[in-house]
Image (cartoon, rainbow, N blue to C red; front, top):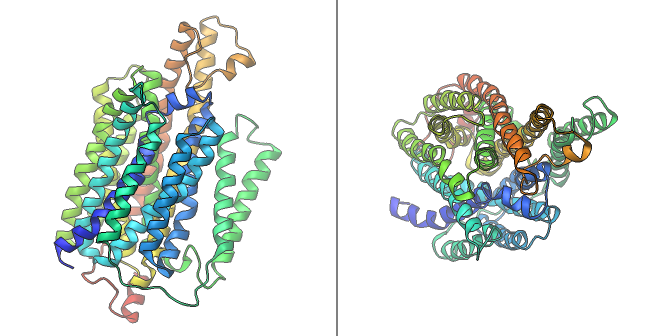
Length: 511
């Protein structure tokens, strides 16, 4: 396919990816208003994000495996329809519980769209040339991430629309995407007969991850770290994941191919992707809350303030993508990206309720540059080591672990933030001479509208001072990503769509 034919085929894919990305970011700055309108809590605030990420994470390897077995285009069209229905349901939610449930369904479709777009591109373009088009992917993701908070803020601030349109707005985009895909995307029929789907492995992985994330959300608040609940949930989650690993070594078509992820290069790339996942999701979610709850900005203003981070993603992904296609090398860009990412997190770890917005913008720019230089290049590293017939499962594996990093990041950082905010607020209330009771503690959350002005100010300061703690944790995890990337063996991306032959495939795998 020449450049023009590839761009025509990419038109629907890029729009679909835009829709999936914007569905997550459009609610980021609107969440304080959404949770306030639905009378939700800080834990529910976190779970509106975590539910979709968890469903997306758990389903990603399944969609990746299905893409190796069935019609990729049909799977993508089914996922778009599911996404549209779930978006409408989210818009009509009447309480926080309903919204969380519908967001989980939306997450199933989001996972499909994100992995299927990567798999289809990998089926059309060689790894070396893919760097150029991954630059376009990164640009679309950056525009969606930049435009999402701005769009969400505008919709929330517009009285005759409101926050529900943060979900309804996806519907016209999905309709256009379906038409474009029908007209422009033409793939050869590569379906296989006599296939089997690893339902047991998929169920065990999803259940094990869910149990651990639920435990992380409630431990230290609803029950103690050393308690029977911790033993049951943490131990049960580990046992379920151990069973999933055992199942994956026995089934014919594992949903997470262990023979791929146990190799040195994919394993190190996956470990580095965990850090990038935490950066991509945790940064946008909690910075939006920081600007509104602690600094007093509206949704639209909070969206504008996140532009430096998204601009960093846009510029670095586009430039590094072209450089990768020109040189065929990925490791230098990944290393630089992760170092810059860590520096950005360390900067954000110093912020409080009065930090200069100029400094915060600089730190966000560094985080954006780091994400843009490393995220798609880590996917390329894994795709370069597998034959075309395994591209879906391999792409699903790294996307799964990157999404898992984001899901764990939001859950863990949300739990840390909630506990730190409560501690800071109780300390501030005690200093102000306000009696602290169980009822007072229960009111410490993102919905401040019904509290007296002096107490509002104390809780705003508590949120601002607590936010830096979560980014210090992120910086520590990003260091792990740097170490993993440092051990990646330098390799040149191949020019062919598939590995030339089985012997070379094995040689590449051993590297």
